[in-house]
Length: 360
Image (cartoon, rainbow, N blue to C red; front, side):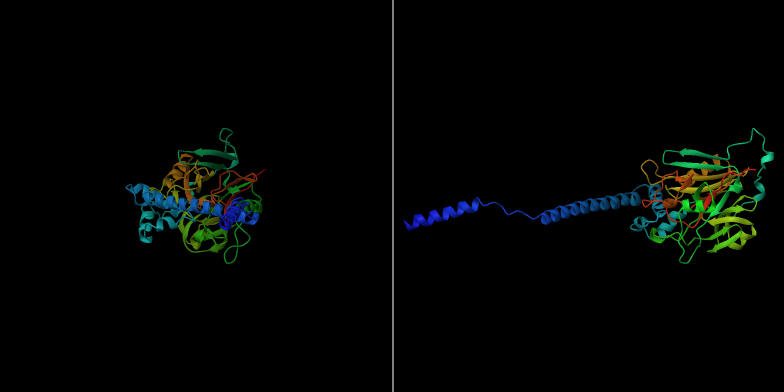
């Protein structure tokens, strides 16, 4: 009897335990689990993306096609944040060699200003009169862009922040256009931007504004206008630029066209990237070109692409300006191209600004 009762009590206890309601988890515990799983999921996605990126990069860099490898390396090396990718597979010496065989052939020739003749308004017949400012859509299989034609080159000036160098900070193109009382503008010279975190305040090369040397970072490819409103491009020191009578100038490159002769481009010509360029025709018309890049609908353009566009529209002198995430064309209060920077327009040291049309 005692054995039966003992088993009865035990079975009753087992039944009670089996029917007991599970303990409820706290809301905080549930939220913690959801957040943990979310970040685990994100981590897995990021890891997969990194593996995919490294794998694709390996295929491009070390695959069977040297031209594809050169194109990939040059494209990555013109970015601010992705230079590390080619460096995973090549030494600095190998990268330098790749870049040298995929660029323009260097020239020491500098613009001969006498080859550009700018007609006065009185010299233009009614048939020759054209829109003072025109914007043309440019497109190809790998890129889309904007070309701005400014008939009067005296309207194109250099915009700058209040100060340059030292602890100075750059400003956006919209601010530079406003400071100059302009209606349009494109980014211009290069700047110190190690790791893609530069604040745009320290230019590379020189900066000349209104005939005054504002910054001297040493000899470089200079791009600017002289006091007769003629575009001058070529390698020179600050003193040589001043001797040329430049009123507004900055530094970047390479030179694309000089004195009517296009530069020879080797290999992939800088890779596919966003581009900003400037040129001038024999009658003084200024060509301002921006090419969108790093997008599904517009990968970017090579040096050769840009030269072809500028030459097609009559450029006799032209040069590459700072591109990539700095590439911006601004007109009538808004950016009219697609900026490649995920953070929006960057702070810059210089911009070529278009002033309003002159009235008599």
